[in-house]
Amino acid sequence: MAKYRIAWMPGDGVGNDVMEAARTVLDRMKFDAEYVSCDIGWKFWCTEGNALPDRTVNALKDTTCALFGAITSKPQDKAKVFLANRGTAAIIPSPHEHAAV
Image (cartoon, rainbow, N blue to C red; front, side, top):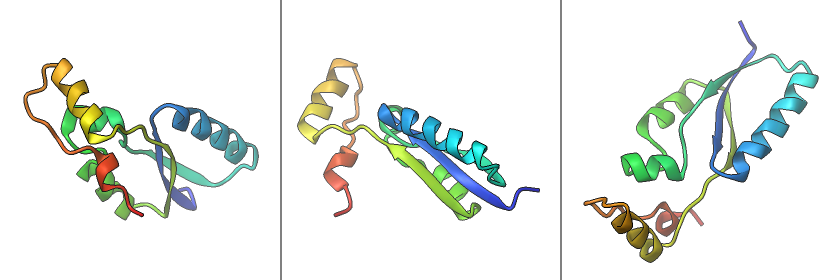
């Protein structure tokens, strides 16, 4: 059994590249960890209405820590246009509008 359980959250775009580099470093260090893949980001906001799904929040409760890459977001006006062009009926508030300061 691994010493640490790490929530692995690459997110979108450059987040995948950043996390790939982080994993290379951790593996070279022979870091004793189990990596738990977690969903986060623009894709989940578009498909589920939540950039940080409840299943990810629950996974975070069962891990030692989390590594997070990056997520993409759009301002609400641009997100509405994007979703309208995709034929999405419900307009969901953009996570960009609710970012923690």
